[in-house]
Length: 313
View 1 (cartoon, rainbow, N blue to C red):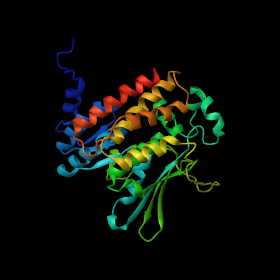
View 2: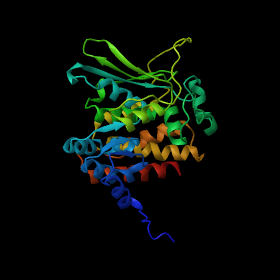
View 3: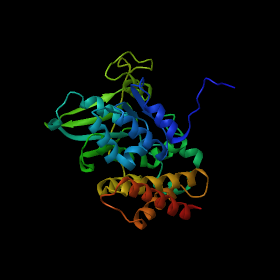
C-alpha cells in the first residue's frame, strides 16, 4: 500500500537506522542484548551514542567502550546518575578524580522493617517514592539491584575500578551523583527528579539550553540527607558489587539471574526476598570466566537465565 516506504525490522533494521549518514547521535534504548550489535555498529560508524540501556555496559562494557575509543566518538549516559558524573567530569583531568559517588533513592521499602520484606506485595514494590518508571526498573530500585548495575556501568564509562565507586542512599533524589576530588572535596550535580534533564543533556551535547522541566526553587526549604545502604536490606547491591569486582562473565550472570527473578516476582511465582536468593544461587552455580570474548559472555547470559528459570518456575 505504501510503495515509497521501506520497512526495517530486527537487528539488521536497527543497525541500518543507527548508521544512516544523516544521523549524528544514536539513542540506544533497546532492552536486553538485542541492542548490542546496532550500538557497536553505530560507534564504528562514528556516531555519538546516548546509552539508555544498562545491559550493554553490564554485559559488554569492555567491547562497547573499546569501540567508542577506536572510533574517537562519545558515549553519553542517559541514566541520571551517570549523566551527572559525566557532567561533573567534563574539563577535568583524570588525576583529579579520587572517587565516584552514586546516589540511590532507597526504593519502595527503604523504611520497611526487615522482617516484613519477605511478605511485601508486587503492588507495594511498584510504588516508587520519587520516580515514575517501568515495573522492572522500579523493582530493581526496591532491591537496589539497579544501583549495583550502575556501579558496573560506571566502572566502564569512567574507567575506575569498583573499589573507587561508592553508593549512598539519598531519599530526595535531588543530588544525582557526586565526585570526590583528589584533595578530598566533593562536587555534586543537583536537579529535580525528572528525566528531562539527563535526556536533554545527551541530545543537545555539548550545548546547554533551558530545560522545560521544573527547576529547584532555592527560595523554599530544601532538605538533603544521605546515609550508607544497609547490606541486610539490599543484598542485591552486595551481589552486584561482587560481580563487578570479579569482572569477566560475572556481571552478565548477575544481570541475567536478576532479570529472570524480577519477572518471577512480578508474576507472583516467588516472594520479594526470592529475588536475591535466586540471584545468589545462580551466581554461585554458574562458573565465572575472567577474560571472555563476546560469545562467551552471551553464553553465560543464556546459561544463567536457564538456571534462574528452573529455580523460579
